[in-house]
Image 1 (cartoon, helix red, strand yellow):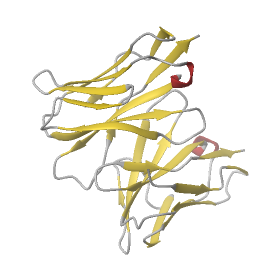
Image 2 (image 1 turned 90 degrees about the vertical axis):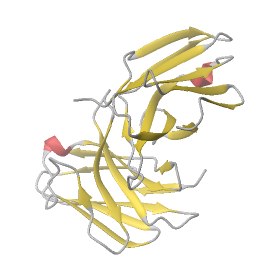
Image 3 (image 1 turned 180 degrees about the horizontal axis):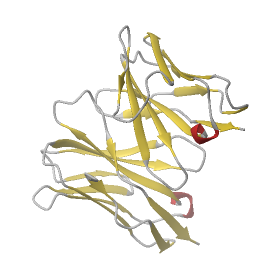
Length: 113
Length: 113
């Protein structure tokens, strides 16, 4: 039973446009939400995070939105750049855990020049 | 973000041999490190949580006698795949736990012939 789902395995966006990556979860006990970016044959790189007490966090071109009632997390990238092409994972941490993360299945973003 | 290294970055071995993978936290002390495994086009699957000075905690379905984890210092955790078989071929990634985020190593590609 998947607790964290990224329903879109892939997404293609034109350069300069907005990329929206989505993540849904089922467990209300998650209290910290992260997005990671991963290139092939490399480890994930931390992008941006948000705690459960907020609904939005912005860092440059990246904004993460959290809708706790809908159990939905999204990452907005604007403007999208070809270098943003990678696999994006959402990762969620349950409250009170030993900082373990539960990862979504990932979305392959391709930004077309 | 923090720097985590892994060695080797790739390894090819014969079936039945053992392989050791090192994970080092280069610029901070990590009391907790995690080991993940990723199959092609799939998410990161947590294998075990490595705690400095104590036994690792393994996820359900992960054989602790096959995947030996040692976290002898605050900057080094090792994963030894014992008696490796072709089905153990995978991409192994470690991470070091910060306060909220995890910082990932670049991964190790293991191919068992």
